[in-house]
Length: 135
Image (tube, rainbow, N blue to C red; front, top):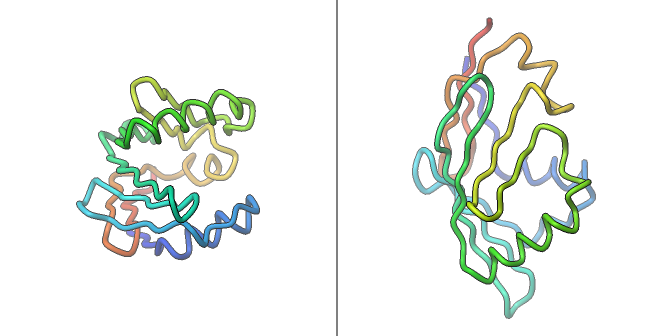
């Protein structure tokens, strides 16, 4: 089964679930396994993060991200100060720029992924495509 969701829909969900203003965020798939996220903190401080999917194992997603040194320092500071707000199921290693998302441990996805297996995640130019199978 394939499910496709646009980045605009993802940003809308993010804004309505968290209250974060997503007007300054832009997402674009540049390769099937790489997503560029642009965030404009201010007119003087645009930020780009490249997020690359390394692997999918047992409904866990392993990502690597790449960004400037300044952005990396901001991320490290945010993770340190917001550590208790990172949802269970998401592990962020800012030192090695790695993110692990365990879909079976996230409240928003565990019920779905108890019955489904994520086979692939593809970043398209304007959308995200999930390839799933029933277990």
